[in-house]
Length: 144
Image (cartoon, rainbow, N blue to C red; front, side, top):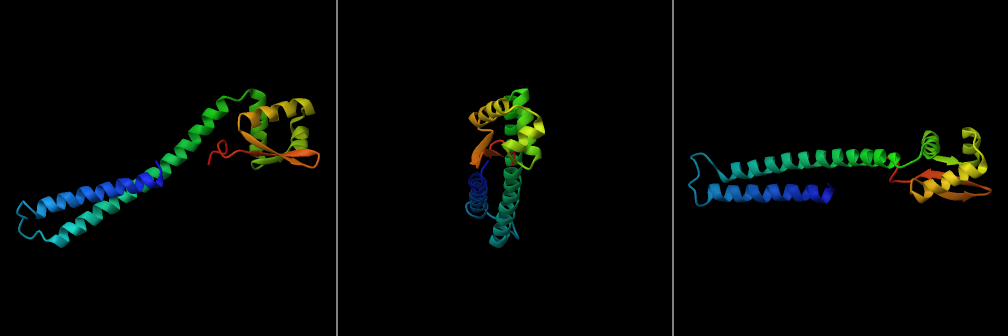
């Protein structure tokens, strides 16, 4: 659910409440003591409640969707790829490839192949930095 959809829900609630208010205040005889101001206040309260619920749902849905995407994406990685990916995450989401090789005690060729696989799967981005690479976790896999 996006912010636009949340505003759509709130707008729908306001329109439905206006229709109900017009129905109560128009063709049907209003109950004694039922003023137009009371109907307007009720519509405002319902819009506020709907807006609050929609806002909470947007934030919960975004968080759940990001966590779910990360879990599903991690399931597609091999053990070695996951090991490299988790090492990049532990280093704050960004790591130099030469330091990562020493940390994981892997050969240059094996780490290079794993990094290329991770880049092909869009799990990380690789940027050239002098004689090594800077590896960053991509937005899709960051879990944000």
